[in-house]
Length: 130
Image (cartoon, rainbow, N blue to C red):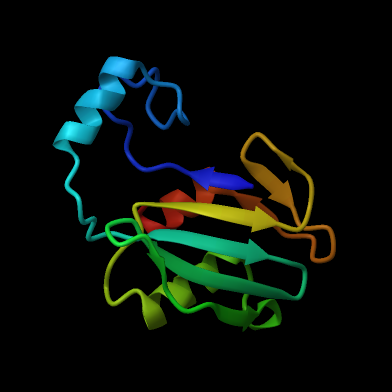
């Protein structure tokens, strides 16, 4: 899986670390964190032919409808994610993402085995403003 983390809580070891922060930092984060989060988390299963996307609402714990897209309609993963968000995120930008990719993952990057695309968590976060 590839992680695009949300901003680090107080006491985090480094910006974007996952999830290496102290107990005191975790407790402070829980106290300050609102119960309902306006920005969802993106969850995705990216294969060589299709990708499936949904949004997770942490406030309610519910996962929105699953949407499938054909990757042949896009030039890269960021384009497929962007199209999904434009159609289904109601103007909200996800605050983070978990992407399951059909290929070996190393350093928060995956090379899709049957497509030749690279799925890079940092590049996707930058391209989509996460």
